[in-house]
Length: 419
Image (tube, rainbow, N blue to C red; front, side, top):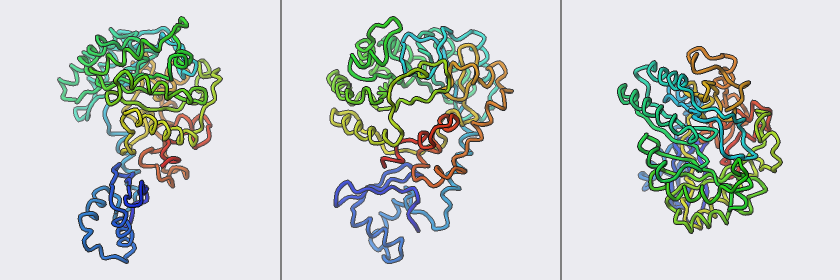
């Protein structure tokens, strides 16, 4: 037996050792004296007597593996299977227009709602799916998707009906700015199969209103936060806090306010890194003047944020789970559908006509030149990825960053630098 290449070991105190298995996504806690003996057992200097239960647990968690096992080959096989055999993943833009004017937005927005013919074509794709499809997951996206709420509900009803008739498990979530997410809207979304909602709040009122103003220049903070309180009983609400150097120092004020409103333990709370990557020169981020953190810098920011959130009673972010593929863009079974029927592979390309790979009306024959780079993305042939302890929980990270000539580390998640 040997210890997995992807086992991360930390000692929170002198008596306890925590071992995280990247391959299985499991965390094992054990006395440090036992971990010392486990290491000796693997080295052949301890017979393991009395450690049988502990050793079995570590084998089940894939912390201990057979000497001959090629873990990189296991991960490569997992990656390839998942990118071609997963659920049908539909990101549907019900409204490319938006009522917010966020200066760091990566989308070029146009006032366009989901066309009836596009909805018909999306339903046809599901109808034409093979009988062994393992499921359907829809992410409702914008712009601001709830500007197209009626289009969302109409299409949702049809997709759920087809899924039920054909025996496909169905799930859905939504990414929204929160302006329309009051109790009535949240309840209606839940009735239409939406289980989770991501809402972004970037700081206390003056900060958030600067980063996420209404298109008319008005404040958005109070209404969004009040809606989060109203939506929480109906949906799994996750609040995302986008940070750069301009707002990080004000984050605690936001967390304190959310806690004061009784949201600790009722919503998810996480931090995300703003980036200055410009794929679409027509997007607001092309002229954004903020100062963004590098990926290694953000690793430290994330730890500090988690510790701060925990002090106010919010759930601690779990250790990394198993990742089969990093995102929708590199999976053959996932696609982004624009309000006018455009198809993209990556969320960062939404609104960019030049980056479209075709339309939903020719779903079966999209532009191979547009799809091939995404499906050819191979972290296992990259020396940065193939030798990285974070590979099982990252699987190559953000291909979009790599395709646009960034530093290779910019595509990485935080585990590489903060584990």
